[in-house]
Image (cartoon, rainbow, N blue to C red; front, side):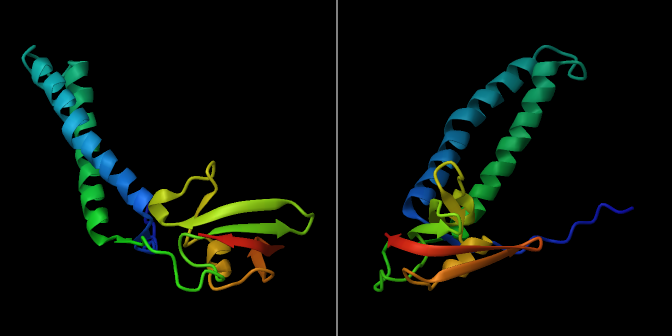
Length: 164
C-alpha cells in the first residue's frame, strides 16, 4: 500500500479584509513574539550540554520548525490572496462575502457567510466559497432554491435573505 494522496485542488484566492487582518496578526505574533521566545529557550537548553536527552532542546527545535513552516505558509498565502473589500454592485445576488439566510425543508433557518478557505469557522457560520452550499448559492437571489446532493441524500434550501 502506498501513502500517495492526490494533490488537493487549489482553494479560491479570495479573503475578506477581516480574514486578511487575522492572518497578518497571526504572522506577526509568530514572528515577533513566539519565535524569539522559543529561540531563547533553545539557546539556553543548548548550553546545558548533551542535546540528545534534553527535552527543552528537542521540543524547542520541533516548535521552531512548526513556527517556521507556518510563517512560510502565511507569507506565501498572503501574497497570493485577493482581498475583497467592496460589496458587489448587484447586492440582490449571492457573491463572495455575503451573509445568506436559508430555510431547509423542515423549516429550520441557517445563516452563513461565504468566505475564503482561510477563514472557515463553523461556530461563526463562516463557510468556504469552495463548499458545495456556497458553490450552489453563488449567483442566486432571494426565493431561489439550492439543491445539495451528498452521499445519495438530497437537501433543498430556500434562500430567504442576502446581506453584505
